[in-house]
View (cartoon, helix red, strand yellow):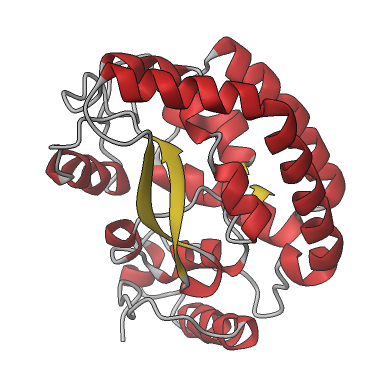
Length: 260
């Protein structure tokens, strides 16, 4: 067993996932003096870590449901307009469905407004994700960790991405319970397949529409910093932090920080 072992992603109970990660943390702590452990980049959380979702899950779920339902009703004219514009701009459906890995490794279909051509493949993004997870820059000096000049993106796609309008259909994912208003960014399967144990702590809570990384990091921080931000939320999140991050998200979207 090594710190880079990556078990397959399978749905498990929250208790089983916690115990598995705690076992890995204890194993790493016992070998903290070994050279490989010291330089592996693995971040060890204490075995007693309790994720935020266990402490106030019911309140968070009620809040998510009510806010997403109200938002869908209020934003329905905007949702309809964006859907029509996307459909008129390029061939294909307005909505794009993609598998993501949610809480406890459970896969679900995330909804977005389509921002790419329908004949696109994910080879470009797979290569970019691999470089990103290895700590390499994939963009320019202003957005060092975001893929730039992606040839797959349509004209309207570039606009709705920069303004974060492409994310609005995820309100339906939140209403259903696959996502939360606040949480770690929902991960792709080929991203999770490369996770070390440290990274898998992100899967202890429900992924979110916004979060610490989405507000404070985005395309300006590397992958390990992104994970550190998410782990802070896993261990120290609260409803008050959720409210703060939701409020700050409006400013980030208005300034289009890192969304281009």
